[in-house]
Structures are given as C-alpha cells and as structure tokens.
Length: 224
Image 1 (tube, one colour):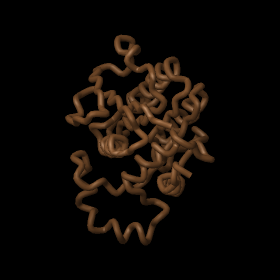
Image 2 (image 1 turned 90 degrees about the vertical axis):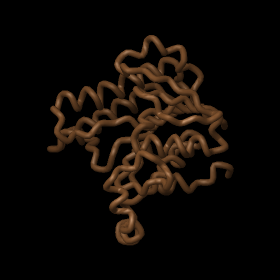
Image 3 (image 1 turned 120 degrees about the vertical axis):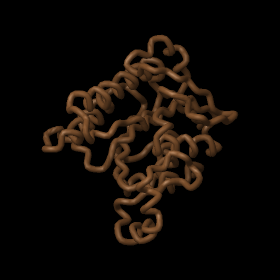
Image 4 (image 1 turned 135 degrees about the horizontal axis):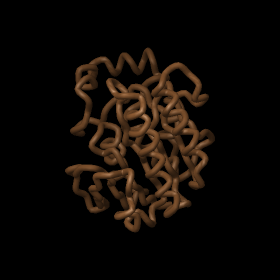
C-alpha cells in the first residue's frame, strides 16, 4: 500500500516530526501539507497549501481529493484560553476539517493527535480533557475507513528538527533516565510518526492509542 497523506500542524513540534517521518518513509508517495502559514520545507514528495481559515475550506476542497491518510497534528494549548474559544479551536476546527475530508476521501485513515489524560467519558472535571474526549468520540463516528486517536505523553524530539519546544531541549540530558524509570509515558517523536504510517497501512487492534500502543505500533514490520 502506498500512502498519500495530508499532514496538518507542521509548524509545531509534533507535526514537524510526523512530516519528517512521512517524507523519509518509502511507503509514503505523496504528502500534502495543509497549514495556515508556510512550513519552510521542500521535498519532491511534498505539496503545500497555505490557507488561513480552516473553518471554511470551500475554496480548496477539490485539492483535497485522492488522499488515503490524514495525520492531524494541529492543536492549541488550553493554558490561558477561554473555555469556549478552546472548544472552537479544538473541537469545531478539527471536526470541520474531518467532515470535509471524509466527504472527499471515505477510504481515508484519519489519525488525530490527542493527548494523555483525555477523557473519553466526557464527564470528568478537567475541561480540556472533556473537549478532546468528545472530539475523539465524534471523529470515530465519521465514515472514514479508520480513525485513530493518538495519546502521546512525553515525546523525545527528533534530532535536527527546528520546532522542538525549549523545555524539551533543557530536559534532553534526562531522557535516558526517564525512559528507564517511566517507559509507559515516553515515546520518541520518531515512534509517533512511524505509528501513524503503520496505522494507515495495516491498522491496529485499538482505536485509542496510549503510549504503549504507539510504541508497539511503531515497531511493527508492515512488510510481514
């Protein structure tokens, strides 16, 4: 299977890492970056659409045809944000993009980067976790071929990439210790990207992937 992937959020750390793995992987033949500002990456596989309004994709819809995977890495921090604005930028935006894509590509595998601690019951005390839980649940109701919610925790960044958060750079000397003491909470950004690619190729037994699932899926040999 050859993957034709749409990737969002590539000006952030996770999206940049997923894009990097997609461009390097032999199973990925085409990548469309959908972003609100240029990503600054050039590659023979890569095409880019810069579009300022993700709530209205009507002017670019025809360019979204013919893809069989979406790696949705776009997200906003809830810190300091009004609850309704966070819902609009997280739930409303993602659902609008997903609904547009499924209309054009029902055979698509949609991978959404959620986060550890997301509340699938939608009833917990933490507002952001409820919003992401509802988003995961509603994405899985859409008629895609497959939908996966990825819930990474601490991600070790890929060396050489530009979008690594500053605190990850400060913590870098401690990563080997963290991996030994808390393996259930640690992935590499490389693992996250590979797991998404493998999910599109061969699927997985769970639709919500915690850290241990991400790490296991990343290590599967898709040729077997």
